[in-house]
Length: 319
Image (cartoon, rainbow, N blue to C red; front, top):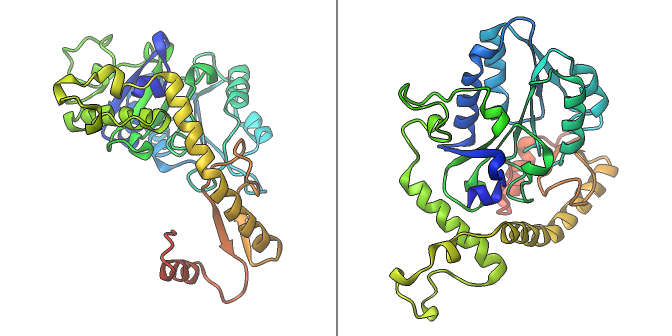
């Protein structure tokens, strides 16, 4: 189900781990021997710490220059003209998030990849955190041209496990940290320290069944199918096709659209009236954002803590 959701095909591999945070930390350590003083690393500030810490630490260890791509003055995840000024011929890594888990904005990944490829070092690695994107939209690494892309299946109704796609070219640059006697070409095994949780692997299979059910209406263990467990067709019942993965994501996007429109409509009114400031795009366009919103109160006497307390008293989850 993960290779189906992250269609690397023969162009890469999918590595599993305990979480996206763990996988990105492991990946960062693999670059130690490749970077030194004179190299540059660009990190998007609006990202999750999981894809910030590994590169900050790599810069400290290697002496490479660390450059920040800051959020835009308008509350966007980052402005392209600023990124263009930061990326240089010495840039070896660009780490960013496909969707900020704070702002909900979907960045223009194809345009960013094109920009980085035109300005950065030839072997620059583009590392993308897709954790906040994957629950809402289909992943298309084969179209985006990124080197590394991670997401968390447990955010997509699966088990607590992380998945990291690496392109074939990117995987040639680094050696996984698993036991020394394992051939470096044994990917993903060379990156999966101690192996994957068997329970999580079983959960990934069930996740495939869930995605298929969303679009086919068939429950794999439905007793009305008049089949015993031994008769279940694992490949057919639990392994969704790429088309079914995309259809499941499209279905979830449609389900999200109405509450997204209602919520941004209310927040936009409060924003225009000066009660709050919405940080992020003021639109319900599904091509621009996912239903993750951030705002701060701007009226005197109203604190963030009081807004949270009021929401909780109304049984609305907020943080």
